Length: 187
Ligand code: PRP
Image (cartoon, rainbow, N blue to C red; front, side, top):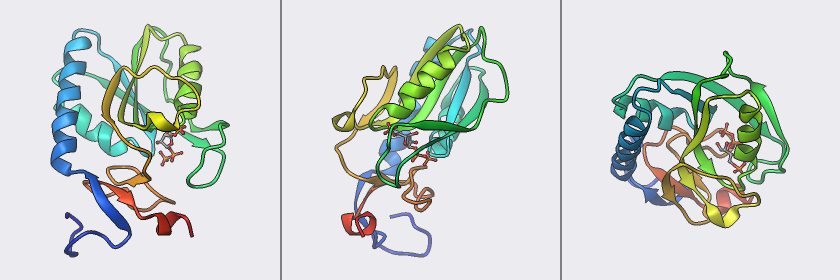
């Protein structure tokens, strides 16, 4: 457990799903694949705020090729734990992506609605190529099919937090990915 000053599992957590070591090892592997697939292409990595910020920060430090970075912030309408399907851009990219090799970097694909919207939205801007990298994939929750090109972990239908993922803005800072106790989000 790596919650500074506190011993044992955080009281809101049911269990650790993925340890820091497991995550780092997989992120390093994915970075290796991306480095080899995009060699010579100077891709633009687009981080989806806020959840992807830690994954993206680790990913780029394991890459062995030059990349550029940009960010887009989206919000799905709905409550804290259920997406309604409608997506709104809160902060758009700073630059045109026309003619660039773009890699979307997400923390999690759940229903697929956010990614589906982003793929269509970014494709319309005519990048040279458009691919998707996600750390976590929860296929059991999918409402719309989305192609994932780089996939860190397929996970069960549990409410996970940590390593960038939150519940109501909390717990993003954990180094491990943990399952939140149902009583915390169901109350
Ligand atoms: C999460 C996650 C994805 C999206 C996935 O973002 O980062 O963007 O939900 O869900 P979906 O596949 O059902 O669309 P969230 O809306 O929680 O915002 P955040 O990244 O700022 O925490």
